[in-house]
Amino acid sequence: MLQTPGVHHIASLGGVPHPVDEQELSAIRLAVDSQLPASPCFQVESGIQARIEFGPLAGLEGIVTTVKGHHRLVLTIRMLQRSVAVEIDRDWIRPLGVRALNDGAFKVTSN
Image (cartoon, rainbow, N blue to C red; front, top):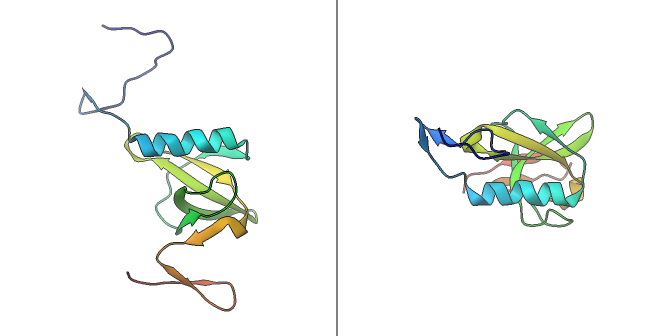
């Protein structure tokens, strides 16, 4: 058995080593480096898909959720089925696949 100090597990599918998506890892690194409040969370499958247009996370895409009145961008590493929720400012968000309504709500649109 191969052992490497500091390595817990190697990501694999069916016991065969498999690389983790580099864009997903880069998004997590950027979130950690931003020093914005972040916490582990369950992988989210529902919510508004959005792109961050401003702030230290500009360019990232993820699912936006609201927890206790605070907006969070959920970044997921799908292969590992793990997510991180990073606190964001609502003004940084540009929803994808939705149309903003006059009252500030969003309506899902088809592309």
